Length: 113
Image (cartoon, rainbow, N blue to C red):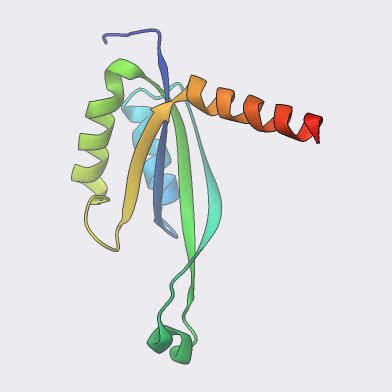
């Protein structure tokens, strides 16, 4: 496997019950680390509110991958779980160092206040 030394945070948000499958598949694809957490989504729709189904449970899978794997991860996840289709979920990724620098910037702002 080709490596680039740049780490990527790969995220997928899926319907409840798919998180374990996505986590296992991300490990098969070569993720360095993966974890799944529960989330809660809301939909702003008056009909769904009337029916009492506004809140939906989601599973968020976070994986640390190598930059060289990024395109392959998006392609394979979308192919297997159809996360690129409406109402199936979503995948996105960003450099891990960007996450850290954003956190650091926020902490510095709070220290100043």
